[in-house]
Image (cartoon, rainbow, N blue to C red; front, side):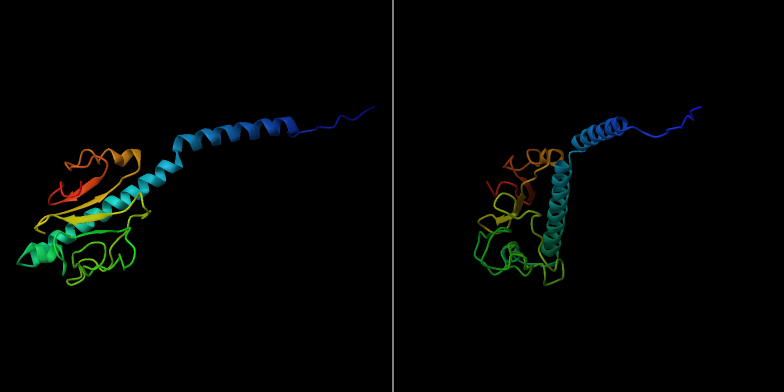
Length: 173
């Protein structure tokens, strides 16, 4: 008489089918989540927070310092003044008016170090410029994600390809 042995377990084919199904589901989830877009949204969120913080600091500096706004907005410079976070040749992060933002924010401890664009390359950087009188200002940045890029043409500024903040959104073309 022969003994029947109970063979319980999975065959190789069954395991391969399960692994294939898991791989297909993982690929679908990966495509739905779109991690590249999430990274872009994260960088845009940083940009928007940076610009909001800089805008607040500039307005506080203008309120705290009486006198000619041009001396505040173009610290120790001739007017109009401008700067870019992508410039080279000097400390662009200096917040004493010598960095990319030409407003002295260090004097009253508004901001100790200027922020830079998360990528800060020739395509993504911050720009600061004043009008000829030095009394109005604008800061621009490019937003890259689908979620936030719709803010660029809707910010009431003159350039639909850049997100603009400031007291005059027509200074930077």
